[in-house]
Amino acid sequence: MFVANYMDRVNLGFAQDQLRADVGLSAAAFGLGAGIFFIAYALFEVPSNMLMERFGAKVWLTRIMISWGVVATAMAFVNSPGMFYALRFLLGVAEAGFFPAVIYYFSRWLPDSHRGRATSVFLMGSGTATVIVGPVSGALLEMHGLWGHSGWQWMFFVEGVFSVVLGFVVYRYLDSSIEQATWLTDEEKAGLVTAIDAEQDARDAQRGTTARVSRWKLLADPQMLLFLWIYFAINVALYAVTFWLPSIVDDIGGLSDLQVGFLTSVPWICAIAAVYVSGRISDRIGKRRPVLVVLLLVGGCGTLLAVLVSPWVGLGALCLAAVGFKPASPVFWTIPQSYLDARAAAPGIALINSIGNLGGFVAPTAFGIIEDTTGSTKGGLVGLTVVGFLAALSVLLVRGGGRNDRVRVRTSKGAAAPAPEEAPGTARSVRPGTGTA
Image (cartoon, rainbow, N blue to C red):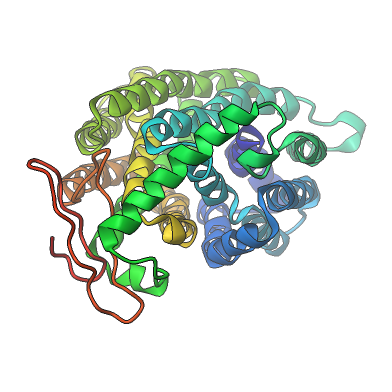
């Protein structure tokens, strides 16, 4: 599902030249259209995730997938800037809730000790998509003129229809809960449920209450604000590289659409391996923050080198950037997963994802303006270096990031829950809105 999701989201970068020529879009207008997706995504993320809690993963994830496939297919019929903006906005509405729904889904299927690897494997889907989308989109773009249609129209139509068909397949095979999984024995189901419930019981014991967690108070928690900023920065870097990588590779010169597609796959092939390795390392050592800091610094160094070297060497530098920024996302998500109470996990994760994904609006929009103004993307790459380094510094301010770090919350009456007795050397948790241990 994530392969199809990411492909329909970022294939726009490969259609850039043909689409801009046919529809009459400037670089800034194209960047705005690429980014407006994320405005809709942010607006509808939390409501979508709350509806997923009501209808269940099977129904809601299938609804999300089929609706985004329909909109992605409709992109083949864009004939004006206004229609381009409208369909990109609707694509954001359709996709809203998919990623946080899956992250929440993992929290109800796997104990914390296994979520780092699971999240990394899941997010390898986006890396796989970026590897696949280049050659596939390049091949479809070369169908230009077939039956009187442009190559970019064939690309959007074929890739969108694929998502619609896959949505019906998903409905047949996806299980909403552990209890519904026919591929598990009763003993395996009981073991998983017991492990996950034990983690929630431990959180309840730590708080000394079973009161509901106020979802809106999450915004008053300094740690949540740090999560929002760090994920925003990761997305600024990641989507800038994703949307503009085909254009940067095309600057090498003398390449066909298919060759550009294959070359843009190279950084993401490197990133897939890095995603899996970083997830294994963070699970093994049980400390997420040091791994995340290193990844962000590596990504920032990669974008800086891309400015200073020739286009061919710059492709290698962008491989380094992808190796840093792509794995940063799955490693990051293990930190709020461990921090948030399970009953606030769905809205909390959706909040982080929706605000953080606004980085996907800022990145292509800013790059488009910079290219229109300067005629080059180098200024944007320097900006990504700064963003990556600032995000790395911000991670150092995050409390926790270890396997046993949990949020402590207030009771519904606002009184602080009594602190549990702590074994020597254990990390103390932070109450939302107080910033104190």
